[in-house]
Length: 404
Image (cartoon, rainbow, N blue to C red; front, side, top):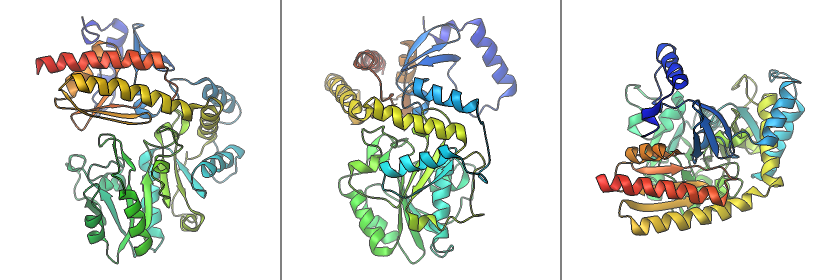
């Protein structure tokens, strides 16, 4: 019998409360999660799940990583929140750590990826006081849900019912440098792109594409901004996804795993560009708050102290070997894409039933773009957990394919 068919009293009570009082803007699975540790979570009935998509990619270090928990507990007993009209040591230290691991420069802190991208959009326009207001983005990309970010997202399904969208955004096919060059005019201010499409199906930029964008930006005096909300903070085995391509951006945006599960976002930019985001032009009340800052610092320290960047390479190799072997024996799998702990399994069948089948096997995964099973495992996932997860995922794909 499936998990869905065996709801307990505790879960039913929670769902009833949600039905009565919570806006139904999310499609939720009928499971109430209560606690987690590493790559495992447990529901209200005590059932254990292996989580290969922890926190929608936010729990980069698994559920409740001890160093982050300790840092947050310590901070919350000292100071919960102060506004950004005051200095706090942790925020400055957090900015230093991020700067030294990226291209240098300065940080603006906020609370989410969409806020980080809104800051980048404003910065691009402020650089020329709005003269160069156009921004080129790419089909298949995803940049967030606030109005500027959702307009930047070149996917019509996210625009339905919201029109008219904001002016100034132009969309190019992903990977097409000629199309980008043709869109640039005297009012173009910048280019915003994910180095690795996340929601778009875990698709890395084609060889030479980011280099070509850098060249266009240098020749036409444009800002090159990389949305690293999913690919940043060590997930790919490098601190930031752009470091795999050898292309230096002018701006990167971060969130999700930035604070190992605690809400936090950031925009990093060069000192020259940073001066354009002058006082009064942008703010985030909770941005860089002491709790997020301590969590962000603890996450960086844990990654380095435990050698997790190197571990990502080992874990990725195991995932690649297992999933490619599954592809070779199962016609339902078209492609396997593994970039560190960003994994896309592209199917020839609908992915939703596969997610449901995985859930019945107590495995948590995600489907994006209809047919891509997306995994964003924790950096510290063990080889045993990888093999277990691949076994369950393989069984699910084969079962669903046999019924298709």
